[in-house]
Image (tube, rainbow, N blue to C red):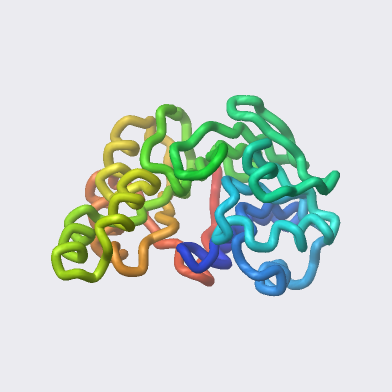
Length: 243
């Protein structure tokens, strides 16, 4: 299974899971033409698109995706917030497992300033268990047997504090970050609370342009876990193996 990053961050998020037979799209927060190009203009094996919440950097192309015969799976609150009524928009609920092609998906609640945001535990025989969590300042769930983790690492509190002190970021915006996004410290605490015995790789997604340090984040998480860490830069392609 290959992970392909089309975009990650406030400018737009979209990730592809591809194994040659099927493609599962995670988020559609980029222009549709960009997503289509990332799919090599081939929609024939796209089995669906998961959307975590309604913010445009995660859902920008949702109407075009739906109108091009791709089923979108998201919460009732998310779809209502975007006024989506297309029959291809499938309502899913936290802790209710469902299937998309050969993918098994378990949604779970996340904590964000959105109506009904979700994270996803995704299983497939080619990759094992993959956890996808973004745009959340807290996760109440613990997971076992994870093989791959895609997790937001949006900001560092020390960098954020420095930017506030220097007048580079308004305290109101900083307060929103604290109550809506995973920081480096949040990620470290989350990883320490979960079973990483089978984890092969950790991909850090949705880094802030101004309040993060990719090299520092990668080094700290690798030192903590002993697991290879990658930054979800546009164009990253990573082979995901089960064992």
